[in-house]
Length: 157
Image (tube, rainbow, N blue to C red; front, side):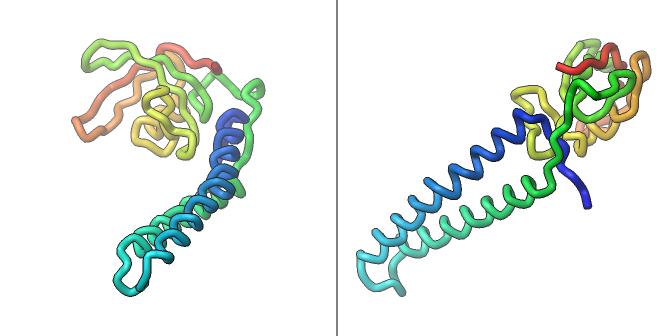
């Protein structure tokens, strides 16, 4: 079984989203179906079909989040090793191709958010950085070609 390793913050955020979908989301979906049903013949009612499709997508999302939550393991960031790149490490890198520094935090797929510079350990860059130490160079294949990243610093936020 594969676990979803998460921060406490990420776990709480996911839990809140799931509760919102189960309560307010389901309530709104049921209301939309009821309103569409009142508009007559269901066999030719596009609003009813759309409301049922939306309900199906909502239930699929709830199911997906339930699965993520059931496989979640919260990591204690204070217990993590900063001698090498692991999940929840923040890594300051030098992109040797363009000679520019960037920092990423490696997180689970469920917590990944590029705007927040949180990348999944399952991504090509995440995979290429795992296990590396300060001073090492990771050669990572990306859609734009191979890029070398030098590990400048590893820390926990």
